[in-house]
Image (cartoon, rainbow, N blue to C red; front, side, top):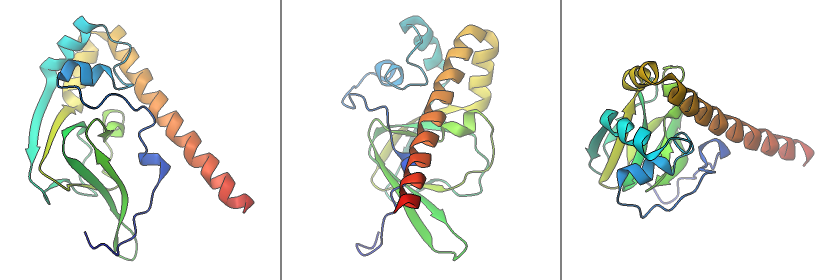
Length: 173
């Protein structure tokens, strides 16, 4: 990335739910996420059966803006940049994410097209939960599914409140 390129910091991408990112155990890393915080260790162990591990090299696209939203990603190691191409066709950096951060959770709800691209800044290891796998998990364990969907709703609500507060603050200026 060009050092002169400006990074636009959008609160939508902020990880409000920080946790200890030095965890080496995937179960603990998942339980640290707000989506899965209400799951027991046993339920989280069942969730591990649908987690896929992926490795990306620096500069590789994880997904492109406009791709179908197929899953959520947890950064196990490395860094990821979220970029959005606007009407000017110039890509703007929205966020830089690191170990312990997650992105793409909206795909677990609606499966709409990606609103931005995700690119590995460094060699990156990701844990991925794909929407069809999560839907099967929820169908088999509906009470656990309600907890997961509540967690996703809390994330969306917190991000939306933060963005609304920032917009209101900008209007006051």
